[in-house]
Length: 349
Image (cartoon, rainbow, N blue to C red; front, top):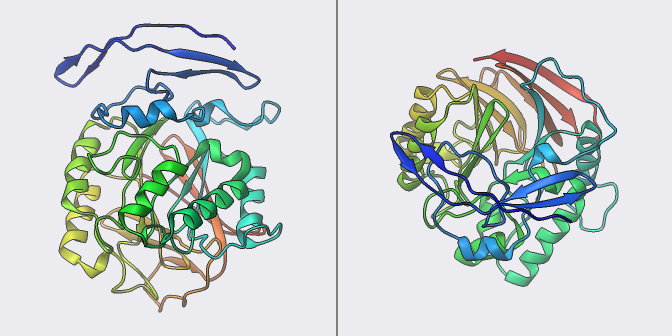
């Protein structure tokens, strides 16, 4: 194990933020991982610098950046330097702890075989979070199923993950280690990251109440997207904005004015795609030039198929997605949890 100290000055926007940053290098079998004074992996943030949660971050062991983990023997085909893959799973709340062949367990195994650079979860990881100890145990069981994928997994809260209100948040923040660059009081619940040529934003549709991504988050999102310079932008939140089946009236559409304000912002900033869960089907729909992908049943019960014309594509059954990014070309491949390819769809922004 080797340690070193560096100093860096980072400039942001029209102003200059001079910051002395102590860096710690840890040599391991997977290479050298760089952490800053907050024990977070170092990366250039193009949005606001997080100023909160310092004490908690110091106490946690931050996993390495997704680009620095994974198999050293597997060689992925690279079309260009901006090619990478990420997996998307959602609504795993029905998974059986201790099972070796449940739907969630099958999905995790097949995602691992694909060796994605990142993994995204659209929420509802567990069935409920009313009692802290039980909730924590459920999350730890979820992490155990994910196994080595946890080092590169980013997730959002679903409504089932927040059934205990603020107590649920405390468990979430204790169990998971996520970026702390979101708005105040939304630390590790709302955040953004950059990876290669893409920007990823994670929002919370369960706080302070269901069916809305509120003004606090939208104000932060406007600043985040305005500072973004990446080719692609992917946004993740649990409750689907435009439900196509059983959740019509029970997603963000329950508060259409708030939903429309959010989607207008996403369209204005030319967001590449949005990934959501909540509706227990796979679906695809283009709204105002922004693709909405529903990945809502990796291990839950089935919802009904959409009526004709409600979605460009849908699938009823347990599933996950693999997303291939090649510059501005995006290919979303929907798989059954057993690994069978169900649909492949490519588009460019």
